[in-house]
Image 1 (cartoon, helix red, strand yellow):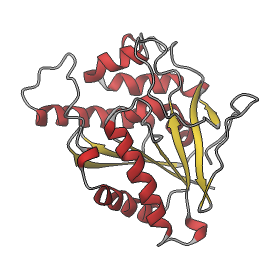
Image 2 (cartoon, one colour; image 1 turned 90 degrees about the horizontal axis):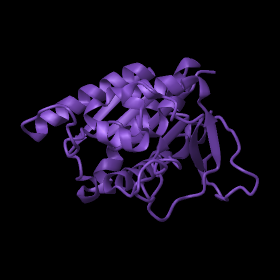
Image 3 (tube, one colour; image 1 turned 30 degrees about the vertical axis):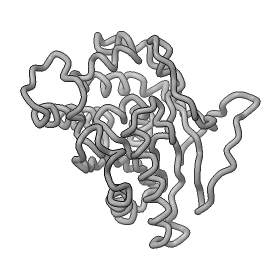
Image 4 (tube, helix red, strand yellow; image 1 turned 90 degrees about the vertical axis):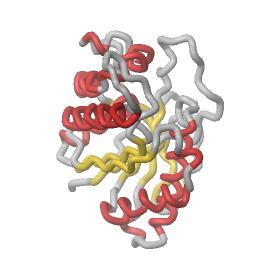
Amino acid sequence: MKKRLLFVFAHPDDESFACAGTMAKYREAGHDVNLICATSGCGGKSGEYFVTCKQELATLREQELSQACDVIGVTNLYLLHYADGSLINQDINEIAAKIESHIVQLQPHVIVTFPPNGVTGHRDHIAISRATEQAILQSEEKLMSSQYCTLFFASIPHYYDYCADSAPTGAVPITGKVNIVNQRETKGRALHAHRSQIYSVNRAYPGVMQGDYGVIGQYEYYTKVRADGLFEDIQESTEGIPEIELC
């Protein structure tokens, strides 16, 4: 049965850092893979490119996101066009309403977003996590129970392996990992599409921008949060992280 997956993130490149392998895996299997990106990344660095204003950077980063989506095979890309860095100060009800409208329209079987600490502690990541969870709860008031989605948080436990920074507090237990061994190159090429973010990519995945994808691991990591209209009792496994499928 063909499934619909919806990934909801804050910036261009979030999808590639967190989930590109998983997204490609399910698209290769014939499922619909949809992406909502809340901002256009105008607050980021420009890398090797010379830009004169934030709007030029936003346009560049949207182009890079489109290229990454082509690599991954994203079915539909939805841009909300909020200013980069502003989500935490926006009306969360407004953001949630926009996400909810896509949920009601697409009726995804699976939704993936950041965990409450945003993986890196970035305030936009935290805001999009809150807004997505709120949108799901609101959508359940309009959908039949058979149309409810399963919510996963995406984690990047090895994000700080190659840099001096440390992860923020408040990480949720990881409850499963998706095998992306056959999609590692695709993830690398998706990351490579975000050329303006070469500094960030090199920090987390050194060598990728030079075409060396060996640093990309075999798994991407998730926490199952809500299913069938109920929140999960999230417990850290004492026997290692099990390999799972999202749908």
